[in-house]
Each structure stands twice: as C-alpha cells, then as structure tokens.
Length: 268
Ligand code: NAP
Image 1 (tube, rainbow, N blue to C red):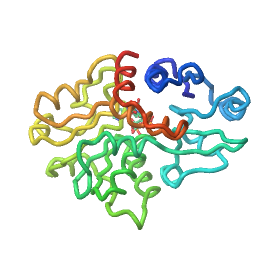
Image 2: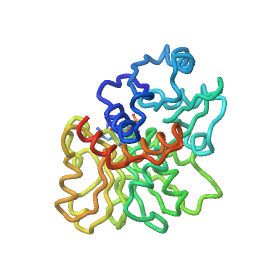
Image 3: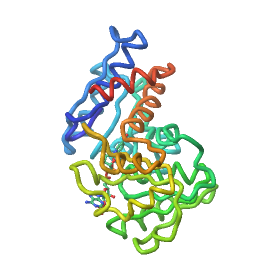
C-alpha cells in the first residue's frame, strides 16, 4: 500500500493474514511504503522490477495512480481515482475497488433507496458513483458546498439507473434517508459528528443503514450512536476488508478469505 503517511494503515495486517490463510505467505508478502508525492510516479514505476505484482493506493496518491497507469477500468476512469494497481509485463493497470467494496459491504441492495453521501473527496466520489450505478437516489453534502457541486458534475452519467444531486444543510432535515454514508474525515480525530455533520442523532431512530468509512482503534461515535439507536451499521473496517478483498482477487485470482481478513484488520 502506497501512501503518505501510511504507517497507520491496517492493510498490511489484513492482507498478510489473507496470504497466510491462502497458503501463499512463503511466496507473497504485502508491505506499506511511504512515498512522498514528488517521488510517487518514479518510485511506483520501479516497483515491478522489485518483484511487486501490484499495489493499493491511499491518500494522497489515488489520482496520481490513475494518471500514471497505461490502462484503467471504466470505474477508475469515471471516479477519477484508483486505489489498486497491477503490474503485468511492464504494463500498469489501474482499478478502483472502493466502489465495489462499499457495495459488497452493504447488507442489502441500494437500488431504489434514498441515500445521503457526506463528503466530496475521493471516497465520496467512489461511493456516489457506486450507489447511483445500482439505482440509488444519491444526495451529496459537503462542508465546502462547491466541491459537492463539482463532484456531481464530474460524475454525471446518462447510463446510471440512479441519480446524484448536491444537497444543502437546510434541505436535509425533511428527507427520510434509508442509507447514510460518512465519507468525511470527521471522527478520525474524535470530532463530534453531530456538530460537524448535518445529522441529527434522532434521524438514526428511523433505522437507516449507516456506513462510516472512518476507522481507528475504537468504534467511532457515529457508529456507536447509530448502533444504540437501532440503525444497521457498517463500519470502516468492514469497508476496508471488502475493498481489500477485491484487490486481492485482482492480484491472485483467488477467492479472498474474508474472515481471516477481518481478524487481521481488527488486530492490526
Ligand atoms: P479526502 O479526499 O481528503 O476528503 C475529505 C473529506 O472530509 C472532504 O469532503 C472534507 O470536506 C471532509 N471533512 C474533513 N474535515 C471535516 C470537518 N471537520 N467537517 C466536515 N467535513 C470535513 O478523503 P477521502 O479519501 O475521501 O477519505 C475520507 C475518510 O474516509 C477518511 O477518514 C479516510 O480514512 C476514510 N476512508 C476509509 C476507507 C475504508 O476502506 N474504510 C477508504 C477510503 C477512505 P471539505 O471538502 O470541506 O474539506
């Protein structure tokens, strides 16, 4: 996994647990490498000659990863970011498993659901694209409203069964969202989600599906509150496991051992 910083990433513990479970740990290993942005392209291009078959990409390199790849999946191109690279005979291929990973983590199909995506960064783009692609009606809220507008314009797709629209704080109150996805960094440093985000905790009494992409050592306040109020909760580690599983499938062609990955991610 390539990032800057990257030492906090749970991906090495999770992916090495998967490799052990698959009996590949003698031949394969998964590491984290801290690449500063100025050196990202040069150092990434050297990875195949160092024996790497692929890489996950995290903050702040997901756009640069897409830009350097010779080939890219439709998802990665549409979202404008890649979290997975594969190296094959000198070619670099870019994919985005954040989108299918989120869908795989959901307890039911988002088709026809009213969804609220909080945030307009890289993970919000993947979430909005994935949900609209499955037929959800997606509202995107962001602290910096102009960025939500840009996201919606960039992701406009005529072929998607769902739709994506920007939403302002005062428009959110009356809508009964069935799915809420926190794609902001709020909660990472213990911030109060109910102060920083336009969610009234009482909204969770209606038992929506609540996905919090943020993960850390402990359960986030948003996840704790949602669980306590009877919402169906998907935490950030489950989303991490699902996107990692899709990446592992790309590199190895094998069925990912989800339970071993969950244990590795939680222990890591
Ligand atoms: P990003 O591109 O840097 O975007 C950050 C987003 O958070 C922006 O929308 C930003 O709003 C918002 N934000 C930051 N501080 C805020 C605050 N105090 N109040 C309201 N909004 C705030 O980051 P990203 O890659 O999308 O990642 C977002 C979060 O998801 C991070 O915590 C990351 O660790 C997590 N994540 C988890 C997974 C997983 O697999 N579980 C995968 C990807 C990301 P502005 O535009 O207004 O600045």
